[in-house]
Length: 236
Ligand code: IMP
Ligand code: MG
Image 1: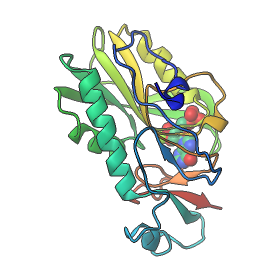
Image 2 (image 1 turned 30 degrees about the vertical axis):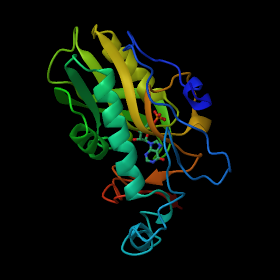
Image 3 (image 1 turned 90 degrees about the vertical axis):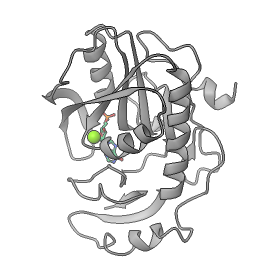
Image 4 (image 1 turned 45 degrees about the vertical axis):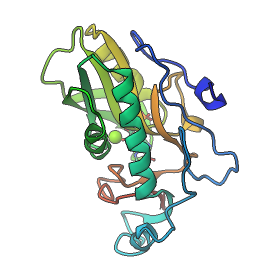
């Protein structure tokens, strides 16, 4: 077991048998995202086109903010999402899985992730609104769209874009947990451990990032920038 793997604890109602993916902490303090396993490039300024787009059409300063440093390139996203899909396929082999995507930010991650999952999988969505400012959630969560179907006795994996304070996820885990799923786990593309206000961690994590506000690959600021193919810091 790696050090990183030890840092992750379960948030499950009933955990699948194998240990999940783990996240490592950036050792150099650069703010670069570190994947939960395997090699990765330092950033997206690598000729992938990411840096060009970051400074191009999306690069102006205005009410949308300015897209700055690329923390996770498009290539690194795809590599890591594939690893997560393969891991999930192994962990849930023989157990039909229900992915619950949290709208809207997780849609992009979830649609890629699903393509790398090789076992029978279904998808449903929830939309929640967290009261608070544009960049801080309060923990008071309202359901805007509930699941279409019951999850009793199902193996359920919540797919989230990012775990920040953890308050939204804490609410979702309690709410969905009360519906008696067989198992309930979390797969988050990103996590900002420094921002955590409640003690919980996702079983599957794509990348740990520093305390920066990021956009792209589904993540927005005031509904903008979701369509960037990489994850970058928003300068304001
Ligand atoms: P939490 O309840 O504080 O963990 O917030 C979770 C939600 O806040 C995520 O699902 C995102 O929608 C949003 N969020 C948190 N950090 C960021 C960020 O850096 N960029 C964009 N959205 C974020
Ligand atoms: Mg969100």
